[in-house]
Length: 106
Image (cartoon, rainbow, N blue to C red; front, side, top):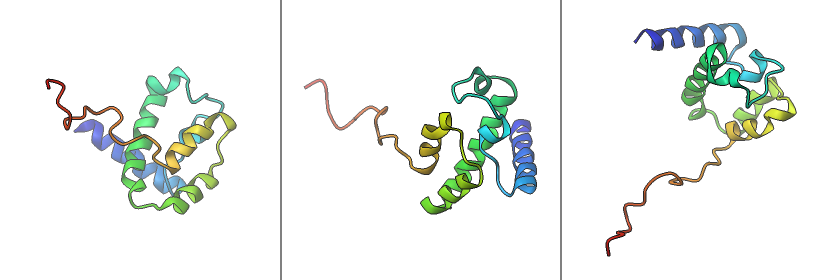
């Protein structure tokens, strides 16, 4: 529960300061999207804050609002694929799920 409260507090602080939780590349400028930074330490923590906030916001933001959000913080070229994923959910539904409708036994 302590981590959730810490995340909520950090998200509230970022929203108060910037009007939204800025994208990771804004807070960690000159850091590649594939950097180890995002898997440990402050970068990992920030990714958690960002995606917790985005998970809450994305459902209430339509496509044009998500685009407008990213226009506020234009991404470096290396982050364009990431930006596209924020705007549109491009992961195929069920790609990594077992298909229970087919029976392999028979």
